Image (cartoon, rainbow, N blue to C red; front, side):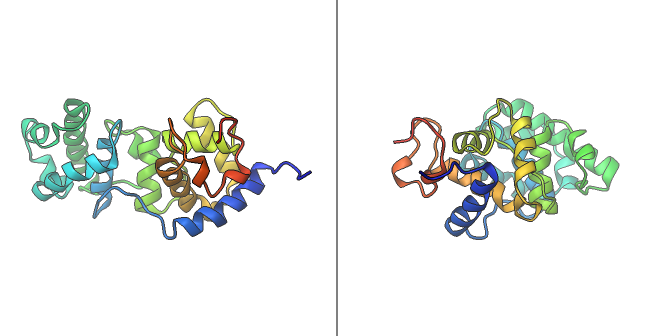
Length: 214
C-alpha cells in the first residue's frame, strides 16, 4: 500500500504537474502598471476577472494613472464602473485611493503591506495580489479558489483564508510561492470548481484528499 503523502510531498508534485499545465502563469486581470493592478484588484472583489477587464478597459482609457483618476468626480467614476457588484463603494474607494496616492506617494503605489492596507478598500488579499504581481514579493494571496483547492487537496486543513495563507507559506519553498499561487487559483477556476469539480480530468487527483472526488 502506498504511503500517505505529506503536504510537502504534494507541493513538489503540484509544482511539477500544474507548472507544466500553466507555464509562466500570471494574473488574468489586465493592467499596465501597479496602479492599474491595484484598481483592478479592488474591483475584482465579488466579481469575475472577465467582468473587471471589460470595465477597466474604458476606465483606464479615461484615467490610466493615479493623477488622472484623482481629478475625476465621483459620479464619473461611478458611471464607468456601475456594471460591477458594489459599484458605489468601489467607485468611492478607487477615487479615494487615487487621491491618497497623489497626496502621499507622488502618484506611485507603495510596495509595503502596511502602506497598501492603509488604503481604502485594500485588505490583506488585495495587498498580497499587488505585492506578488507588481513587486514580485513572495506572498500568498488567498481567494476562494486558493482556499478551496488547498483544503481539498490536503495541503492545509483550515477554516479561514488567513490560516490557509500561513499554512501554505510554511510548506511552499519561497522561490515557488509566486507561481504556486497562480497554479492553485487557475486549477480552482478551471478544474477544481466549487460546485462541480472536474475530478475526471484532474491532473492532480492522485494526491487529492477530497472525499467526494469522482
